[in-house]
Amino acid sequence: MDSYQTAKNEYTKRAEILGRWREVIFETSCSTTEDKENGHFKRFDSAKDLSDDEVIDRVELFVKALSKIVGYDENHVVYSFGEAKNCPQCPHRHHMGPLD
Image (cartoon, rainbow, N blue to C red):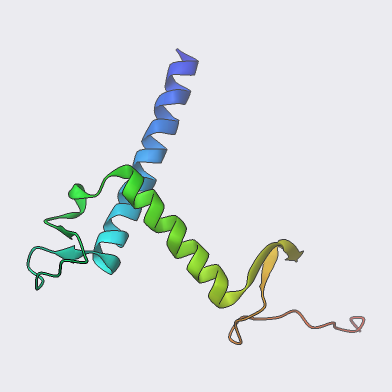
């Protein structure tokens, strides 16, 4: 029973994450049937029309593009924050002298 509950919780968590991603991807990067028709873009009626694979692929592309913009290096950890080298707005840690 415990293994079933664990598997069910993992499935539910995965479904919730995909649902949130699906809504964001649809709102930010999909053409709807109300938009002007363009042969280069697939149009969708709603977020439910996006397959799980399509959502994951678009999220991966978005993360790669974002990494190029900010130059985030998750392996460089300073006080549990990664470093975003290409982003001038990102806070950077400066060496502080001893606390008096």
